[in-house]
Amino acid sequence: MAHTNTNTICLWYDGTALEAANFYADTFPDSTVGEILRAPGDYPAGKPGDILTVKFTVMGVSCLGLNGGPAFRHSEAFSFQISTDNQEETDRYWNAIVRNGGQESQCGWCRDKWGLSWQITPRALMAAIASPDKVLAKRAFTAMMGMKKIDMATIEAAVRG
Image (cartoon, rainbow, N blue to C red; front, side):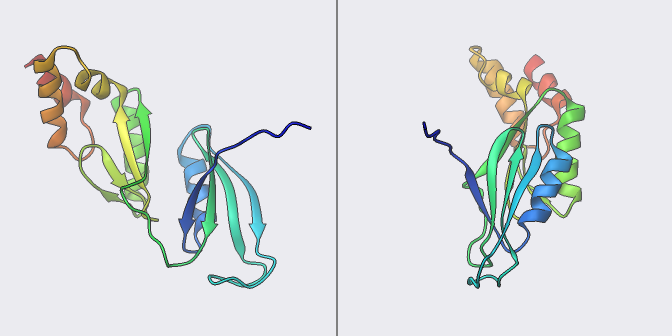
């Protein structure tokens, strides 16, 4: 029997892995909550029967939420980058995260209520920043640097000059 290698992102939570997984599944397409594993014995953050891990996907990416306790926190060193097609989609994801106890940051970044960082990034912004026209790319980049949530109308105006 052949073994298939898999790579799963493991995210540490303080007892809230199922709550987070449910939020992600409700917020993002191609996102689901899967198997829930309950602890068979005592562990530093819980007791037998507590939810130990939750398998879930975020936009097709396999994740495992581990209820490891308060010892470790998320940081901006890891983030999910969600590419969006338009302002409505950008607004929908950004607002869902921020209005559910999250926090705004800079340049299209925000943090959810569990401390996980998200980059809500319009594809058109990335295309403008990657433009071979260095003047156009710099204008788009400079406009982005002053934003929290990305406003594509402002980016497009900056690109036009």
